[in-house]
View 1 (cartoon, each protein chain N blue to C red):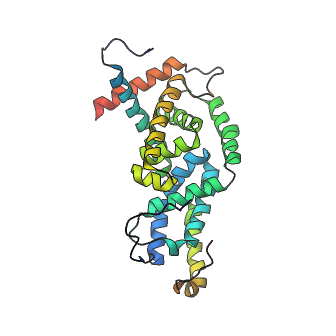
View 2: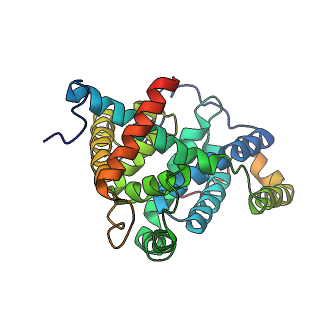
View 3: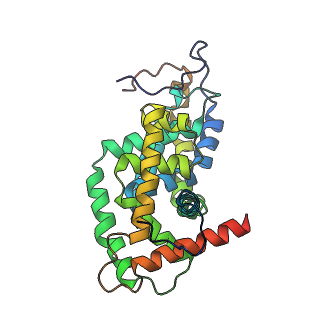
Length: 207
Length: 70
């Protein structure tokens, strides 16, 4: 499999960024890398470990980054590859077993943004990896389908269909409530749907 | 089976679209929640440590031919 490169301008051997600039790009990318890593691992500390690993990888590979290409897409590719090359399953289990369970138990006392965030995070974790990364990149990370395809090393059409499937799946999950809220929760599926509808209203009236 | 409101007679497609907007907003919120945390201290320290690494090995890297990368 060829490495996903940034197709354009393959001709001139573009120069690497000066070290200072490279580092500035890295620093600027860190918050976004953490957000992406968080969605991949589902866990704060695992996400930070992943981000740090990726930063080191990026640093060591800095000669290969060509000035003028998309730094964030480049470094997200590293985050993603690092995620898949490490044992992601163990990360995922940490996420499920501890944090998620705790949150579910101490759970939804107020139906405000915190709970919605939480619910959305859990719903995200129910998606298959490929769909989750696609919808995060395109739906939240601000990447184009093309950029997401480059990051994920797949065809643009594949990203599109993954995003589309992820959207449907998330809608279904959020409407019935994520899997974990079943025992003794005070939010029932129908209420979940109502919450969503309430948000719909506030959104449509706001913007 | 559309169990959503029947009170307003919007077509399902529209309801789906609206829900997708909500989901999009939620996803963005999840993502932004982390982005907003900025760069934690340990990352700042890591970046600073890279400076030192750089000073130590700067000359070697400058040649542009460190071909030891896998």
